[in-house]
Image 1 (cartoon, rainbow, N blue to C red):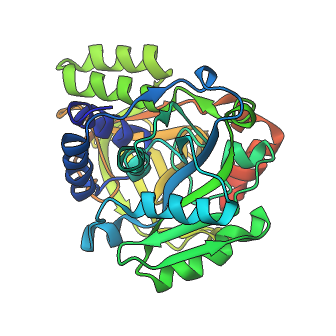
Image 2: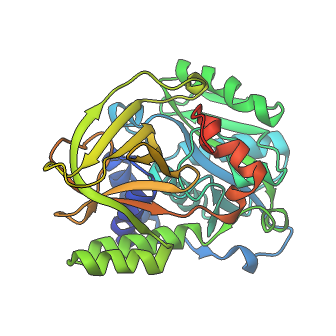
Length: 349
């Protein structure tokens, strides 16, 4: 992964982050690191010896704090060193918590600073809000011990059971400015093979290459269908953007509830309603559920041929509503219980 790869990576993770955005400052930071330190090897998981020591790196918190106070870029490396001190073992490779949004970039910066390879896998295949909403946790890997570092250098090491880790960590994150980079899920490559989503980073890259290369709408949609199985759920104009109260149960999640309506302004087609809490979680067509988390639901601007972030969606935008299927582990009963629509308070199957 070199500095020249960053634009495609950012384009791909804008689509697969299901509404995320706001990472321009981080993009510049990581690009500069790669130019100064050189490229990071991207290594297939199955190419590593089973005893290779790994840990996942990712941001916990919101986009706004890293926009207001851009990270220095070394937070992930400092978190890894704090985790190594706690476990007594040096890492051999860095893993992504998830390869979308800012968490596509923090592991690369960390690997560059530590001189380590990045493993081509992750634990979400999209963005989910809680650190235990991962295939790593689904497979039984403990999230702690973990180490967290803020943009101002606050460092916390946490050890507890996996379900309590996010609740405990959020208090520290809030007190530290709203965002911390964490090193977590210390494990081995052998253990990761049973639980990780393979080729997560290269998948984001392939999506980004399509977005930065294709200039025709039909060709882009065909390429996304081939690359990640994307399908068009509906097309139309954004006719309303609402900020309703969160549905029951959503208070457990750090979220910004939003509803978006996509329809034909002339009134001749179906009405699509998208429900989001930072990411789009549910899509309804004429009141019936048509798609839901853990699959990725996202918006593509039909004119610019570019993903639309929730923070910038506006009435009159011409969009495609796309659905990208999640990794098979998410569609097991345990996966749906952890990250399906009911986990976010939506009383639907």
